[in-house]
Image 1 (tube, one colour):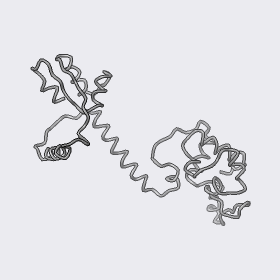
Image 2: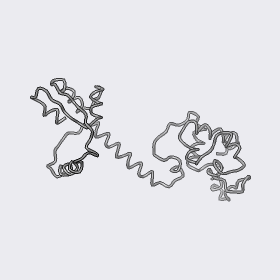
Image 3: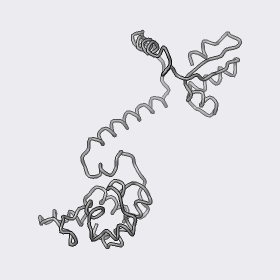
Length: 215
């Protein structure tokens, strides 16, 4: 923007820039960003050619350019108005980074399945969504009902091990044929992935093994 403004009064001007995104926005001509619109108006009034050049990374003089950039930090601060949409974008980015950082430090069962705090659409069938949610957080009636009456945890009738979501979906020998028939394989995070096909496979497995209504 500063280069375009400096071109006032010159007949023919070529401006070199390494901002490919800016040139793409100008080429498309549909941006509502105030800076892009100002550049478009300036270009219409003058004979200005914009030319893309690669950034200085990997080119001789890179260290010198970086040093000059650092020196610029010590120069008097310039007050430049920031478009609202840029401010909102930056606020959202920082909120997301904080949210993601906190999620990565979480040790809950769902953290093993849901690697990022991204929101995913629910299934249309509420009973299927309810079962999937319980399976993903690791708390189901089948595996945790004993806590309500202070009894011992349930043991697998096939293997003799404690019944857990992990055991049901990846370990139990007695359920292996059901898992094979329904295409259930891989790690727990892969089996319970937020993917329509993966969800359908899990629901099919739970229904065929008569476990759906116990979750």
